[in-house]
Image: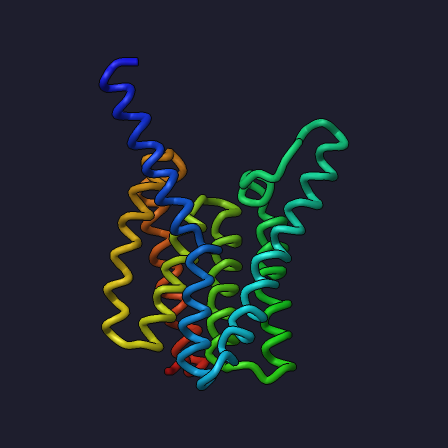
Length: 209
């Protein structure tokens, strides 16, 4: 392997690592934990609320993707869970968005959980629905839109100091570009949707510390 090829492979591996580390479901965990800690008071109460919000949002879409993969594997057309199972199918994107937000929102609502967690889940879900709608004709970055919305929620809760977290967005965008997942315009579209819809939902629903 020559030096150029080795360097390219190294860059791809670094990009894949960054993409995985800043995957939306990874970023969601500290976002919900910080919001819960800020609003749920002392003790360990915040851990309970963060888990009640996070676990359904993580596992319900994952279970759905697994069911789809199993059904397709019977026809030998799909053997494992892959991003293309949901990402490239508009109907499945809408189902995944609903499974992400509705169970967690219902749990928080009926158990009188922290309002900020409820609003964050609703904001991210709204972004997912808009991206799913846009992606019927286009392919905006799902990753960047969701992470942008999550970091925007931190901005609403913690103020301007949270804007430092936005440095993650160029890193994520570059990694997705190097992996060949999106063009700069697709990533810009995802960022704008995540920021605009997030701000609209968070402002209208009164997301505060």
